[in-house]
Length: 315
Image (cartoon, rainbow, N blue to C red):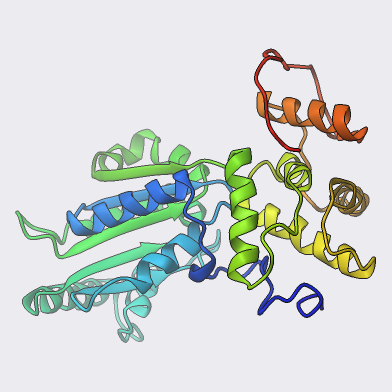
C-alpha cells in the first residue's frame, strides 16, 4: 500500500517471520550464539525462551537456514494444549510413516531412524517451537526420548523454544530429571531504546527505504508502547507508515505514532503498557518536556523516575 510512496522493495514491518530481517541486537546475537553452541557442542537439551513476539521463531528459521548437510532436523511448530501423541508428531516432523502402529512400534521406528542417521555421520536435532504449550507429562515424554542416547554417542539433540511459562513448567519437581539434562539455556530480553531505534532503521534500510524515515522521537514513542518487543514494534511501525502515507508525510513523527497508539487503544486488542520501568519514565518525561505530548500508560501506579541526571538523546 505504501511501498511505492516510501520507495520500499517490500514491507519492512511484516509480522511474518523472515530470517533476512533478523536484527542482531545484543539479546538475539547471544541467543544465536547459544543455539549454535548447543548444536555444535552436541548439547543434549537446549532451551531458548522469550516473551511473545520476541523473535524466537525468526531466530530458529535463521539457524535452520545455516545448518549443513551433516545435521538432520525435525521441527514441530504447531503445538497446542490439545496436542496428541507426541511420538506421532515427532515421526511426522522427520517424514516418517507413523500410521497404524503401536506406541512401542513408533518408538522402535524412531530409535532405528536415529541409529541410521548416526551411522551416516549425521546428527539428528528435534526442535520444538512454542514448547510452553506442552504439559509436564509431554515434556517428560521428551526426556524419555532423549534416553535413546547411550554413553558418549549423542544421536538425538533437543531444542525447546518457548515463552517464559516453559521455564515455570520445567521447574516442577516431577521434571527435575529433564531440567538436569539442559546443557544450554538463554532468555531473550526485550530491546532497550537504542536497539529499538537501530531495529527500526535496519528493517527500513533492508526494505530499500531511507533509515531516517522515523524520527528518533517517533522511535521512542514506538519503544515506549511496544516495550521493546519486536512483533509489537512491527505492528506500530507498519500502521505508522500507513498513517504517514494517508497524510502524504515523508517522515514519521512522534505525534503520528501517538495517533496510531490511541486508535489501537480504542480497539482494545493491542497489548498496551500498564506500568513503567525507569527507561519508560525517562522517555515519557523527555517527550512531554520537548514536544508537549502526553504518553501516560493505561495504568501507572507510581512514578519511579529516580535518576533525572541520566540523559537520553532523542532530538
